Length: 122
Image (tube, rainbow, N blue to C red; front, side):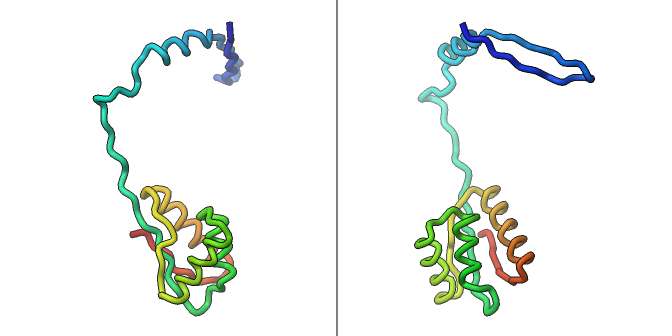
């Protein structure tokens, strides 16, 4: 029998809760969480677009694509060249929250490094 130990700090007192894991396993097995009749809708995806400028270095754009957007180095270089040659490029499609988070993080890092990199969510 597996026991789960949880320590909770509440009002400067330590409360300890013991519970039998087999009860949770039985509930998970017996309850039908996903049935074929249930359906769900995927959230819409947004495009993250980088725009070319004459000040942001190609190395910086490549590093941002690798570190924030989880691109391989080769893919990041290809995207960076697409931005440079075409004026803009879609660097990824994500759910709205993730797209905005990565865009804001990119803008923040670019600003700290003195680059006017323009990134938008569409």
